[in-house]
Image (cartoon, rainbow, N blue to C red; front, side, top):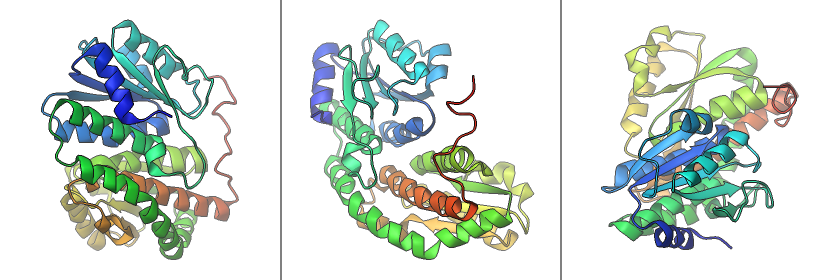
Length: 323
């Protein structure tokens, strides 16, 4: 069974010191890689980190991509063409390549690079799914090449997330799910706000859970950028949903919340600290908030799906028409 320590050891034996790490995927798979990118940007003195949607990686390839690079890609289906093409490109440039996929035997699961096949079902442990795997890869790279003082805290946090998420699911069902679904029924559109590494789930909640899986019109906003233009449309009758993070970027979310409380009559707040993240070391909360928010997003979208009789697996375009 693959593990991050072995994967990084293999990478460094083949390529030597790594100076760039590129995270490459599409849609929900890209969302899962974003917190690890944020962690590398914040914690590494040696390695540059970049995150790309797969097609952009192909069209606007970083010039530094080469033997001192590690490219980490995720294709849940194992057959996403842009992601496979990106893996081939990285390999051709001499980069070390790690792919993650749920599909054993798929094109992404190849012995031409390091392949990590992960399980996927409800209530899988955080450490064995892409959100946990990518953080572990980043942590092992940091630990192998430079000091990473929060290594133990991160690994403990990853282990704690399973219990935190389980309790938070019960809490969100009791406190937020019905209201969220009802507000979606009342409002054709909503804004979703968040910041830091958790902004990955602000983005993911909008484009995957709601737009893709529920056909709900919405937009995602960065809590810090909210005050640099978007707050001008704030008024009563407009639905705002705030993902309030527990780490370093929390002051941005709090500032947005303070304004929204007095300028709209339709605000919902999902506060990570109220849903268990106080049990995680503050040094690594930023990187693990997205794990919590993803699980809560799934509960909220399911509640909406039940009220609207809209199955989360139903599509009208994806995989059905040419695009």
